[in-house]
Length: 285
Image (cartoon, rainbow, N blue to C red; front, side, top):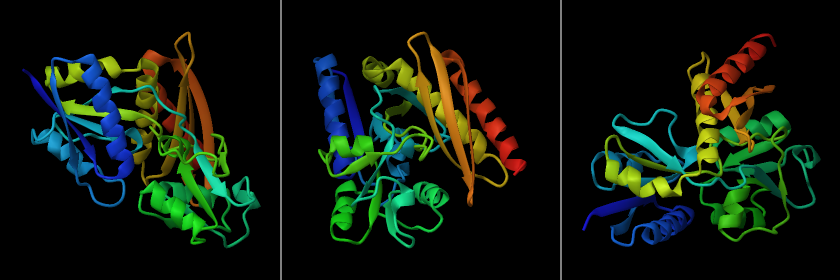
């Protein structure tokens, strides 16, 4: 019997995602020997140990939150597919405040990444930010204990951990553009590993994959700029195959936003073109 080892990083959310994926794959492939392995990645969002495990043949498929994927995958690895994407927006959880501007000057906002911290400060320069542990339950506990006055967290994370209805306010894309890939679960396999690729292929949601391709191309082009800028992006695909990409870049307090559309099959080209557009706008400020 053929064998596939599916891997996820440590942490309650990642482990839950891995188990759900394994259940889906067992349903699809009852005659395939499927096992799940957790790879320790430490604190933060670094998934390098998980990807290294794929490259070293310790696991065959890495289940990764797409926003944590490096923009350039290690040599020998490829993005196989993406599941149907959850709500990509972030949420603001705060007592009595429904926007960053409603928070008092000097209030501390908990965030999960440095990128989110920069976007919060761009929205309201009077706010302080603190980057947490990337453990959502711990961050919600810190908010409840008064260590933060507000918390920014992906809506999909709240839903997956049954933490909805805590007073969260969804942040619209124009107000707080999510990180490229937020809300999507990606599968990384070795180049040429047809068994691993075919195993996860039934989980593919093509519109979600095209959205991710556009957002990552946008972010990759911006990361190559000098000096690099922090970015947010969100793509949508209509029923007739048109992809619309909205992008934001921030550099200090300067913020530039733009959008463009095209055919979903040209997702990466759309991403690169929008990156060039916002860089030109940023240079004129």
